[in-house]
Image (cartoon, rainbow, N blue to C red; front, side, top):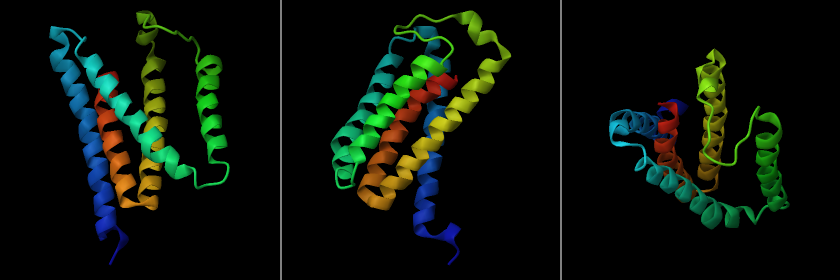
Length: 157
């Protein structure tokens, strides 16, 4: 049986299609609801972030404890994010203040596309790693990414 027709590959493709649909749903939601104000959308962002954190702390970190030096890599990843946010980002804010004129630059779209591409790559790596450990973890990570994709769609729109 060719690899593309295997049940596992079809399940992976179904999760990918669901994630893409969630991105589009988030974009559709923000473009249709924006007349009523964006305040309710914060709950979606909080829910998506909370589910991702819960999946990481409750399921993924305990699973990684079986691997030697795993927590060292967790710390490297955590501090790596802070390093890039504070050194590589051209301008960093701790709050919600923005500079609308910076969004009008032609490069803003390309940089957003690059950032979302890298972000989505790591989503896929996490889901694949979860399925390699077990179907339950893979399904949980897929659900976490799916719930995270709706708020991500807000940013795309």
